[in-house]
Length: 333
Image: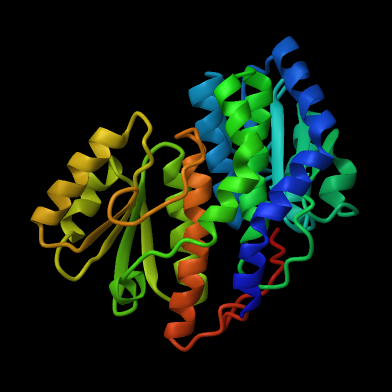
């Protein structure tokens, strides 16, 4: 078994550790956000962590109504921009907590008056040390270049923050059940997925709402572990310019949890099939482990996707743990 597969399979235990170790801190953070809701939320992340931040954005805006946006780290680290963030919340997500641009953006947000919260796996890292509130991911060592369990724990942490902030009973219950849901997810298989993807020169990965950042993460993993050009789009956005690419030689993978976008997504999938494209829908053609809340189902979907992408990489003769040009820790300015 590759490190990627082994680490992805550890996600249920990693999420359980995160929730147990941070239970009090999550309750206190939720209470603080209810007492003094921020007018806006900034997120600070790159790569897979930025996809987790995107998941947090959709959850936060849907459940609380507070606008949330990713801030480009280069605004501070390269261009020397000065943030105006009085009263805002700045959420940093990082596996290593070391990239200089992420450290600089978090510090700029703090100096601008934002409350800084860090989700970080390396507890003695600069991001962890300099955050106002630190929530350690407790994902354990992650040695494969492809981030898997740390991404899943980051998404679970995002869901836990929003659940505690909103006090939504259904969301809180689904977060508590996530380790069990993920245990089912990592054991699932997507019949025919390897044959569907292995000969594709390019493919679409689509989602909407909280499933869109999961599509982005899936496309990233297909690129870095399988060297397949995968383009992530919103189900709505693909109907604009990218629609012209649709056809027999451009397979489409769609995430379709049972949330408010489900009907629109199903309609779009039917239109895509009419172009001759081979379309597979997670939540229809491909199974997923239900979490008990449609806004959390994308987390279980990516857990299954990681296992399938690892199998695809092996089928293509690639080492999923050691991409040709990538390193585990990427430090950018």
